[in-house]
Length: 331
Image 1 (tube, rainbow, N blue to C red):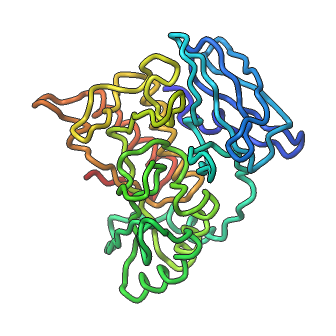
Image 2: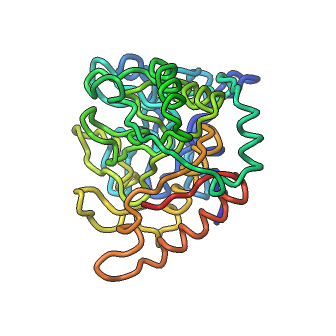
């Protein structure tokens, strides 16, 4: 397996020294790709990207500071043009005019963590040797409703107080990964790196986790590695992973939920999901991952899926090697 932390190389990365942003996208079978920088959903700049021998398309520009929204215009393997979000987006917003999701350039250095004591203690602790009391929440409906969700920062104080009063040791959050509709539970995922835009940007989620840690409360991510949403919502516009460059890089068969199963025989699927899990542990300080629908991931039609089983074994080893004290939970 090469480079389990793909998010360090791919996506949009802002450089303070040069005041430029580098973009890197994996689409090995695309004919050509342009970076589209937008303002209020309208094209502002269209910049041609260059492909290298690894199938990575790259460009560096000084026209995309933090907060800049962008899409990729892809001329795919079949010659079809499609606007797409970045599959490794660190933040996603909805445009108020077009109502389309767009990727956002995010500066990872802005948020300053205050949970150093928690993280140090966690690395020296076996969580399975202490009592666990887990409170499961959907942030976009907690103390609100899904049509008018509160920001991650707005729920922080009351959630901390409630967990301490009730004696909860951990909060498990579902609906964190980016998904399309407010009324969904959040299990039909469209981006595996951006937290749900319905509760704010990634620094808002960091704020919530940071303050839970500072008050002695762990945080578990409900993660969906079994299947992904694949609908194209508008003409020549898509937020889906499926046929990203016109070929099938990730998908297996259709699932019972109307989504597509990930195909773990595909090396890019394994690299992509390794990176997603490690990203949330690394950059968001999650204390555990709960794997959704594992029974469907590892066995279907009375047949074991050996590639999915080996994926779980390998990811389990990597997580416990690099992040001691983290919980690894299968549904």
